[in-house]
Length: 88
Image 1 (cartoon, rainbow, N blue to C red):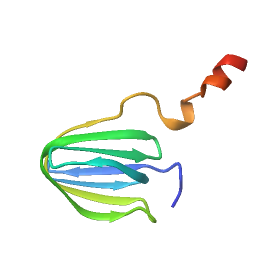
Image 2 (image 1 turned 120 degrees about the vertical axis):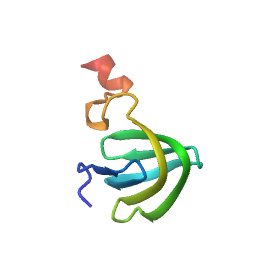
Image 3 (image 1 turned 135 degrees about the horizontal axis):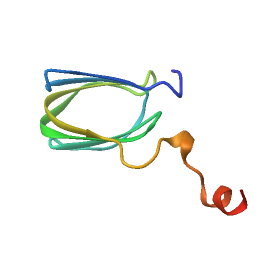
Image 4 (image 1 turned 30 degrees about the horizontal axis):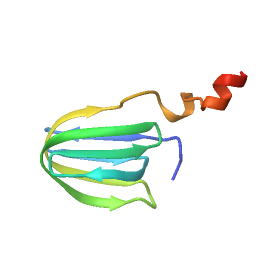
């Protein structure tokens, strides 16, 4: 998997195809949090179901009613650790 590539496709608010997923932080039927190549992705909805989970290829398919997609904070490559901020 290309570590910096991230792709998502939302179909009719009922199917979300994702690429570039590194890990599942949490999963519930009403909220899911994933670590992607571009940072954390929070997904909210109702009746969420993980149809496919293949972290080796970085692919996830979610189905259910998808209400929101949210990337809190900055993408990983733009983040600076505390030591980089102190000494740059």
